[in-house]
Length: 207
Image (cartoon, rainbow, N blue to C red; front, side, top):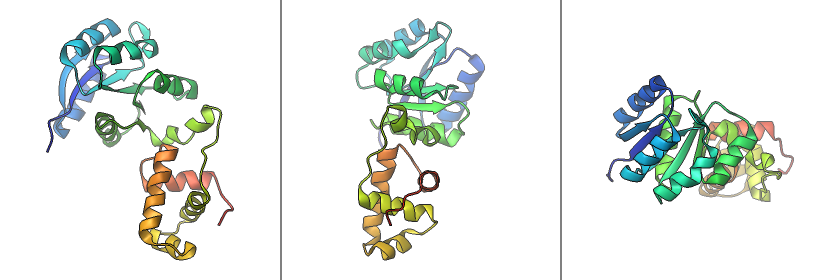
């Protein structure tokens, strides 16, 4: 096992901070600091150099969007996971464009918070699945899927298993699994259920 992930919490509601700490610490994370405003958070981040900053989008001083580059400059290599009540695509895209590595709604279950922090700590991007599928459209473009990806996606949406998809397309199960992994990465999704839900919302006739 590697070193524990070190986390700083920037949230202006003490109860929310306490709850987040209570959720993360039993999972092996170490909370090395808490802050209620940008200035305090910046000071702690500079001193502690955490692996992840869990950042409330709206602190006492207002939207924290403009502070993201400052946090990253203070702790190069740190990942920022934005926690927010905002589902507005412009805000999500703005946070990611500013340098945040993840975006999660505060209404998310604990399991998703834990997954998001771990993902961001590993250097990867994490966007809540219910939001991620629409980000490409929010940025003015459709996800560019290859023919095989569209075929697999359509069959998953119809409820077929990996083995059934492989048989329909005359490919190996391993190939189907690889295509699924590529689809999740391209669409900003996490689980098979997320992928199936996306497929059913975006029916394809390319089978």
